[in-house]
Image (tube, rainbow, N blue to C red; front, side, top):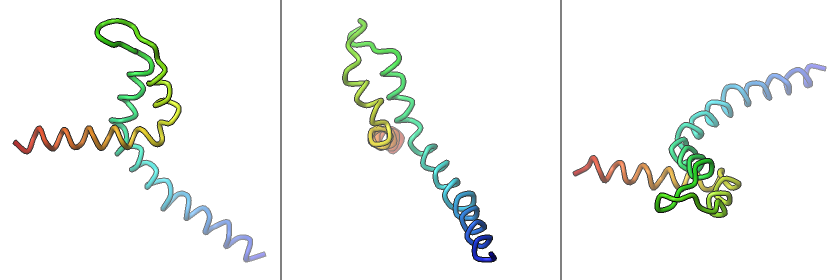
Length: 84
């Protein structure tokens, strides 16, 4: 009986103390990429005209993989711009 309570307690500690803050930090870190992908998907423009959303749809479906990549490019550009 105590093992059951201990297991439940450790699960709660794992989720709320360790996993949730890391997830929030990761989502904030990848926010620029997620915003960029969402803007491309919901407002597709190419050379001033509406375009096919096939590429942005693939990025939107795989946002968990593509958002960190776009965020790395964003942060690299930000560092390059401010470093002189």
